[in-house]
Image (cartoon, rainbow, N blue to C red; front, side):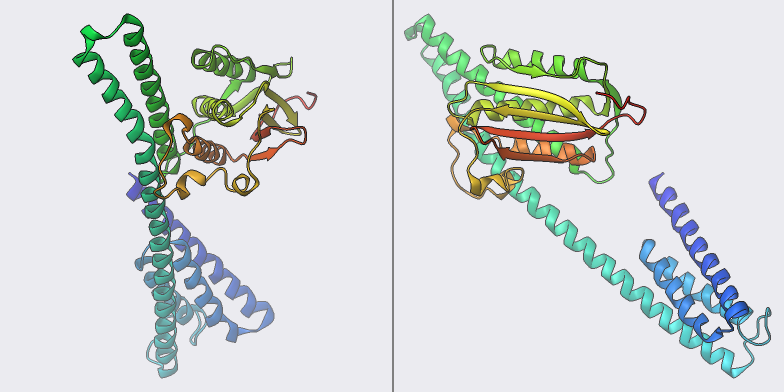
Amino acid sequence: MKKYHNLFWNIIKSIGILAGFFVLCLVIERYFEASTLVPAIMTLAVFLVSLVTDGFLYGILASLLSVLELNFAFAFPYFAFNFSIPENIISAIIMLVITIMTCTLTTQLKNQEHIRVESAKEKMRGNLLRAVSHDLRTPLTTICGSSSTIVEHYDQLTKAQVIQLANGICDDAEWLVRMVENILSITRIDSDGVQITKTSTVLEELIDSVLMKFRKRYPDQKIEVDIPDEFISIPMDAVLIEQVIINILENAMQHAAGMTKLELSVFREGQKAVFEIRDNGCGIEKDRLQNIFKDYFEMKDAPVDHQKKSMGIGLAVCASIIRAHNGTITASNRKDGGCCFRFTLDLERNEDEQL
């Protein structure tokens, strides 16, 4: 289906460009008597066809059609095909060679750009795989070790020791589930052809869902919530935006040393909803702050301390999701201590202007 869709649009774009430039040439010759510009204009048309279509075929066909257009409308005898006149034949050959060369060069440039993009994607996938392997290895080793201890030494362990080992297994398994969710999300967002499906989501329901899931993981952590009292609906993929908020909240839990206060607020700026997650912890190092949403992909072979798990992939996921929603996301340190993560989403067009 996609193949026929691309074929249809390539044909439409080719015909549209050639027809438009043909009319433009007629106007120039009629009102400005500048017929010498016609071949250059038609060459530009072929160049544009080659630029906006896929492969060689459309550009070559456009070059042939442009030669026929020039012979038919802009060479004597006008509005009739005549290849018997040597001047017309030579002009047609020159035009055909120029347009085919243009088409070939344009296609080569497009192929080189495609190769460069694919190379960058492969590099990113390789970095992701190396980084993820570090984060997965330690919890898996812990799970295997704890479960083996329970199985092999069950009779020697006290009930408290078994519960402690089982809780450790549960915590590591939950962390692995969240890691896999993040990996699947970033793979989904970065896949070619994948579009975000936005549905109108009530802000209050979104926040309630986030808080319910967060409290299951961190029941002792209080979050101060500040959202508008009025009804606000935001077009979004609610599951992905929930993941963004939870990832940022978990990042604060794991990295905001000394934190005693965690805040989540939403407000409106024009036709955008602004989400802010703030803490009063230790803040973010300046050298890491600028690249905090892509640090995970730049990790090399440094070992990862499982007790201080990197949330880099979570933040990378956040950035990908917000970009896919045509929003913006930033991180900054607060003057009074701690940091603030801020992202924006477009509101419904018919939202009331008053907050």
